[in-house]
Image 1 (spheres, rainbow, N blue to C red):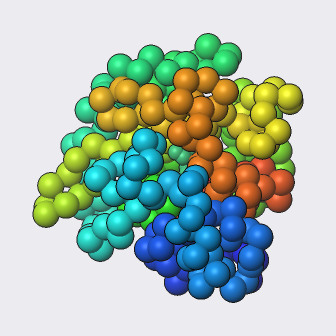
Image 2: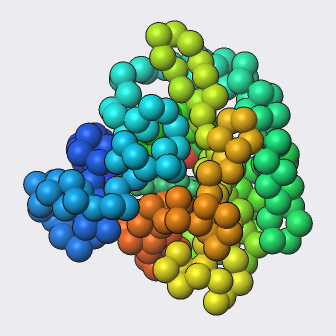
Length: 241
Ligand code: HEC
């Protein structure tokens, strides 16, 4: 099994989230990552799960394993249809636009959706997420055969949490492919984290850039060149083309 598929497998993900592991260390130390990277994570200032980290993407502690809520297909769809309008309205306050002028926060829900329903993403705060991509990024639908997405590609992942039977808005996670030379460490992806009220926590090479370094600490370090920093989504929730 490749390291990337291990990351995606349910056996490894809870460990990843549980220990607030350093993603870079994981890449350096496969395959015995769990034990060794635990120590590294303790000392790693970039640990996204550290309590003092300003990029806390989600909740009091985004990396605390959230209570394992399971939703049936219809529950997940109902929850999403009740919250999707307010998600969009909240994110839209950021006015987040792409380098090519697309209104990402306002328009992403009109793009192609690649998930059949909201599914739990342990690496994004244990929230229910959906993945959308703009037309430039249409090769995203080839999944592992994606090759390289062209500059101007945007992938957006919205999120909500379910706790004690209540659905609440979560952040918007955005990856935008920029022209070559933008940022070698992020493999030219611009990562942006938008809170449900539209506050932008960080954007690569822009305001709060440091706050989103942990994004490519995982995406670039683990998925990397092999699949253009993309992880896609669990098989069972993929829209098939
Ligand atoms: C610990 C690793 C990890 C970190 C940190 C992480 N991601 Fe992800 N990301 C993943 C995985 C795994 C997937 C695919 C599976 C899923 O949705 O859970 C993914 C999927 C995505 C996608 C959909 C595109 C794709 O790769 O298929 C976007 C957009 C995204 N992440 C943005 C972000 C942003 C923005 C941040 C930082 C705020 C971030 N991610 C932090 C692991 C990570």
